[in-house]
Image (cartoon, rainbow over all chains, first blue to last red; front, side, top):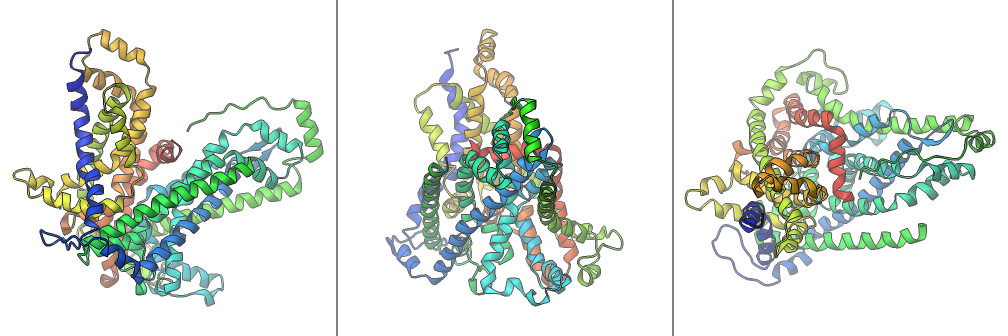
Length: 307
Length: 312
């Protein structure tokens, strides 16, 4: 068995490591260098311009809009999805009360999980296209406006995708919509592993449903909430497909719905400013890392309080 | 992640009966109202989740006239011509074929190379083992966008190589598949390494006693044993590759090489001018079908596979 071990290891490692190194690792390494050049992508040579791209970013108003929008996404989408996810998961798994058992799932909970999770398997462009018709004017689908009209709220009808202030919030809604199911399934698995006798004990102590949820369920799934939170924040950084499809490559009216991913793509492949695009990519890396670390720390502190 | 908790023995029947007398859980009017409210919320979210997609499916069977005058109503008949127009005139057929070709290649390579790498990393000791493992792990945290620009140039430059260049350049199925493989390997290797570690040593030893070579031990013994892990991971990667949007946008810039998600985006952008809404929805349904079928058949594994990434 000793015989031929290294040729075997080499033969098995070469394809995966080779592909990974060429298509993923080498681009990451090059990205930082490209961000220090003024490369247009068309010329064979590029000039090293130091941190000029980063200075340009500092003074770029459009980048500020994109940053603000990314900040909204990173803060609001995780909070909304986690709250809704916890709410629905607890209803599905510990929401029912039957004779003889302190907690049970509600009837049909597995069907609900299947339905809630479905948006996760649908590609973001398809979701974006469908929702651009939901928010469209009435003569092109416009489900939302028609629903508002049907319940007598005509005054709220408007051209949603033409209103600068709404753009990023529409993206928030669409992303939340598609992600809630993920957390329902994730938290359901965590809640299923909570021993039932803890709920029996809570019930014997006369604890109300809300108290049980707050004092028993939430602390016991908090670990899952924590990882889920970080994962969600990182996902929310990338809103590329949703924004690109629903608002277009310029980020909607006056670029008001722009996000960093779309801006980077636009700078590279439509303005041919690859150096600047790479610099935005580096900024996204830094922000992703920072967000991950911040969210981890913030939550760890809170967990100590609750436990 | 599958913590199958058996029902623990609760308090004795008397204690429970006592509790029931005191608090009457599940039988009081207040409790019942609350349950109804719960059910209402759950149903409401179910509707919010399904209605937009159901609406898209219903719209794909309408005529354009019906869609414009009554977008919320049911179609008068089934307008199959929408699907024909989507498939032919709107080029969805071509995009669908492109997606199938690319995903078939990328999924096969991801699973094969991922399993090979993970197997060696999990079960063989050699200098540099940990280094390579962490190299793959690093790919889990780096954002795709940082790599996007240089990746474009890497692929473009590979295209100018002699002989192999035609398969490795921009607008090539094989290039895009390789890019998918590279971006799927971190998670695949990470997940399968953990899986291969859990496989019993005794079987591997028995294989060696029977005179298996390293290669046949992998292909005949270990790989078949890893099947459950391979299946959930293959589903995860299938969905990821089929739904990919930004990577093909960079690699496949030629019109007739576009993949489905990309082609639909272009179609959606042009639909307003052509006013052929129902063909667009037919295209969406065509793109949705493979995913829907996979999800209905394998929903438990899909859910497990997609959530495993967070829990592990």
